[in-house]
Image (cartoon, rainbow, N blue to C red; front, side, top):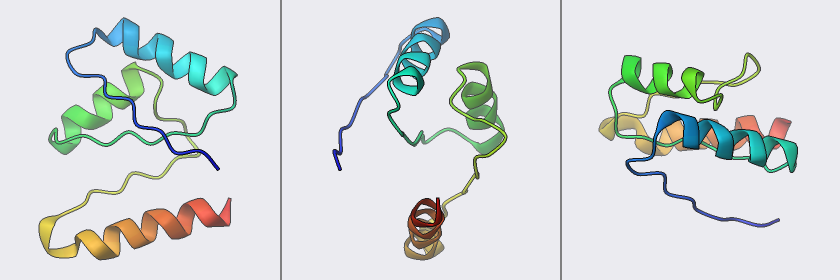
Length: 79
């Protein structure tokens, strides 16, 4: 397994969408992690192609962050 972090700060949506397509075409699995509010994050993820119908949205909150990340890791290991 390879872990890598790519930070797309202040990129255009077109640039992020291109990177998303490149990752998918190369078979690279990735997560979108953002500090945006839920509706904004969902719109960005749909517009850039980060989100597909098979994906799960996890809204992490400070009081449940460990449980939220546990859910993400369990979801990924089931695939």
